Length: 343
Ligand code: ADP
Ligand code: MG
Image 1 (cartoon, rainbow, N blue to C red):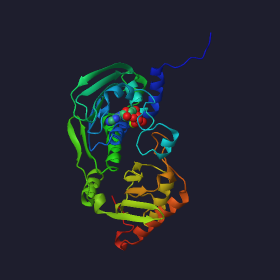
Image 2: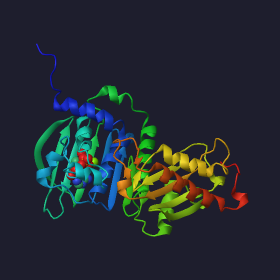
Image 3: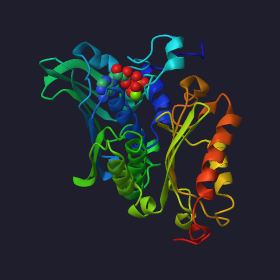
């Protein structure tokens, strides 16, 4: 008898889900990114019990057509790329067509959507991949709501790895913060167990953006931050860096974006550390929210679906630009703001 056989689509999805969905926070990231890709201006996230019992993401984006609803839950189904060339120029946050299929294989998922000018909203449900392909009419304004209940209800081994409600919610909130700091033109609401945790209005003007940063990080951060806005050699760096007087014992206030995507990159971290080297005590970490913009052709952001790595074509150039810009910014500060130990 042959020993090799194909995995059932259901099992294949559950295995793939292991890479995308480790905890509720990953789901929030995927669903909010989908909402952003759909052009949403307002995104509401509801969580219950750390997001394990319920996660609901509602947006006012373009919606999904009735005929596409069931397909949206299938693996490798995406509206975002068609060819390999598209992949090189991809501007959307997602493109693998994997998230909804993966999430629905390990939860009870309901997708409700009303496409732009459609008269009616429609809904599909999937329970642990037993998809009910019949599409039912539903009530919903233009946009999409994805509801994810009972995460890992059918994969108890994974469920065991979930932490306390507080810890899971902490991760979830952190992911949402990262996204909210990347799109000031979008309003975000986060509720946990029916309590409003964050309510962020659209922040077009600089002062409103600083208010959003203050809300999400801390008012102290913005009070001790220098505004950065520098351009050179086709690279642009904007944002805020904290004075050395506002250093941290952890790397918990470090937000860095490349062309709008949150990244965690060794080269970037190294350049920033170098810039702070003379003004920070050993063991202290800088706080910053920085946005690097460069020609998309000079950076590959598609290295890994969840790890926030990037690959710069000219790493040296980026490193030098970051180091020089921040070194200069920090060199201009008054001596009394340097080397003071902080909280
Ligand atoms: P990807 O984002 O990589 O394309 P997903 O599994 O996350 O894959 O989503 C599959 C498809 O479902 C998307 O390509 C998009 O067409 C559609 N979709 C998902 N979420 C939304 C949403 N909030 N609004 C509009 N379309 C959506
Ligand atoms: Mg997606």
